[in-house]
Length: 392
Image (cartoon, rainbow, N blue to C red; front, side):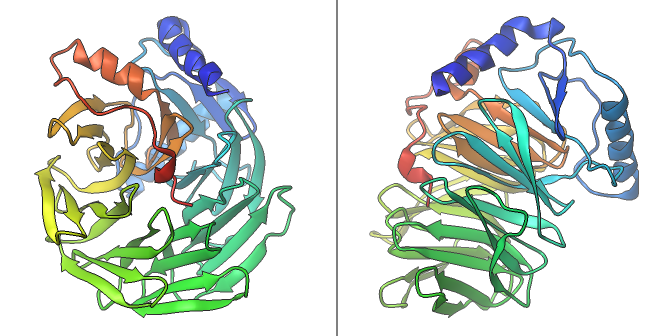
């Protein structure tokens, strides 16, 4: 099915200037001109007015792209009927079977997008505040969500009107991580608590303390034997799940960490944050093996493609593909017009969500191939998404 979708992505490049937006339920789908005017990163009053104008335009007209800027496909999120503004996108997850992409943000609604049909098939309503994290189960039968209302909800495969509330926490939840193999879900946010819920026994497995009081990311290792968290103080902490012992407490960054993840073997941690640095830390040798400043602005999101290739993005609206084998950026993906707040694997493709109220789906092979012709460094890392990086 992804070969079909890859061909579709290439088709958008060929169509280029004559490609037009078509709309579905709550979605506009296009190849947009990179020179289009969209709101900036910060949600100020002027930016919100810009989003309002954009939303009004999308609702009342069909817009044709004039120049295809890349081989990405864009999904424009439209506002709900009762709202004037489209939501910024801050949470996303692709189902393991590659069929669905869950998208959410500050309008409190989850849009379930069918990638094959290219349409929104459900709008899931249950949260009462900004949604910050989404994660599918490994069998693609359930979706977990959490946000500023402190609720962790489960939506089952038939997506009933009412979700199941797993827990209600007294703080905003910024990050979820699921270990389907061990049937555990971890959660962190604006609190000193990092919590792990046992989904089989419906009770707390562990409740860890983190003095930074502001965890932006939690993540299980692929085998589920370790959990990491990164927070406001620039520190990365790792716990052993079997014993509950703290096995790492290391200040790797100069300021807040926004995102961190384990390698496929669970021995290397890659992190990025406000200090603009991408850092890789080897748990076995207890050493930093990579420390690179990759942008001039904050790095807000990251997606490990495999153990040699990572995508990083942030408040300069661009996505950079960093090849660890050549120690260089081999491609810069432009197309968003707001902070890239979230990225995730989407089958063999990469999905990115932004404050510009859109989602883009990128064909990395096509992007790297195009940019290699324009004096970008030639990479050595494979471009295939490692299934182990889909940490569930």
